[in-house]
Image (cartoon, rainbow, N blue to C red; front, side):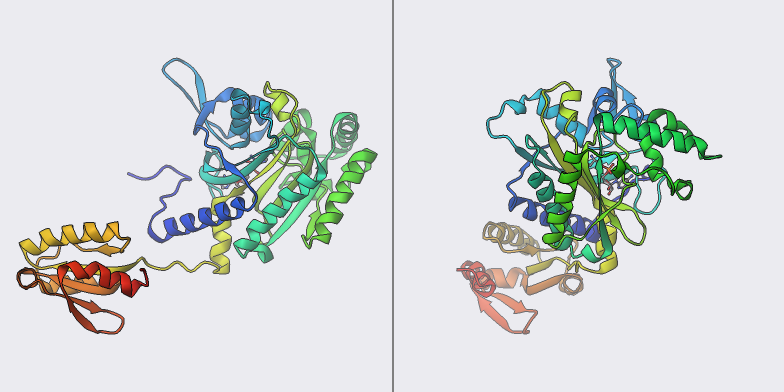
Length: 417
Ligand code: HAM
């Protein structure tokens, strides 16, 4: 049997990297006063049709859909923003007096895409969403957080922070008409762009196939109103003053329909793949049935971040180190080993044995395969004489102690009181 296409088994060293990354992220978020939110892995299809947009690739082509026994159409979540917004509305969090509410999440998302390096059908997103504030300072703080995260992972040199401002309302309509006029003049465009002309003309701007043909298209910045223009300029200049090297990319439009205003992607400079992506989505809560509440957020693609960390060799994964490894060499020794290990673990001593050990010889062999500071051999003689030898693997020193002294000796060695 094989794992499904586009999925991964994560174990041993790889699993340690995941744990490390998640701890780093949570450590950073603690400093920003975020709270965790956990939503279901599947949702009703409606959440994404209304949330992400019925015409997006994600909804049209990439969702894993299934019907339950009561004929409800569910999908494995392709992203986590729409579910978090669904939860925000369903649990009437908007009535909270302490807005803005700041959430983080971490979990799998599913998209039926063609798998390749950094692109999976099940992938993990670590993300944040902030509800209830529309200030430009909030926009800046969120981009600073994304920047802090890539610096913590020591991969900032391999990434570029691209930023754009998605215009809305009448300005957007005028721009779309102008864009469509120009795109219509171009001969032979790809099938996806042909469809985008009908559904969401802005998406032609980040076409990976025909991008070169679109160099002369009208620029969104020409259609932006004065208020938005000023806001965008302030965001960029304040970020630059804070040493965040953002690059304006007028073609950055995002593949999900809910964005309004500032959008950004942190992309791998070598592959151009986005590792972090997000932006402001002030209409989504209302569009999904809640009151008008502004919001902003982003998500980090776990696998893509780990590829970078790997490339940069930022992270050194070490083997587990034991305080002590026990070699039981008799039946009584095995009974005492379980008792002793139980007591040791209550005292936070890291201990293990290998129950395949039957005699001293294979016991030593097993001990060579683990990283341990100390060894104890437990057989009938040590039990009868109440004298246990603790051998330090660091200094080769051997001490003899009574059963009741073993734990205090090891704790003293560990530097605990
Ligand atoms: P997104 O750009 O669709 O945005 O995905 C965010 C990140 O998830 C991407 O930058 C990428 O690192 C990762 N990702 C997406 N698809 C895949 C895949 N097939 N394989 C591996 N990694 C992938 C969102 O999902 C928005 N919900 C982000 C957001 C949060 N906006 C506001 N708040």
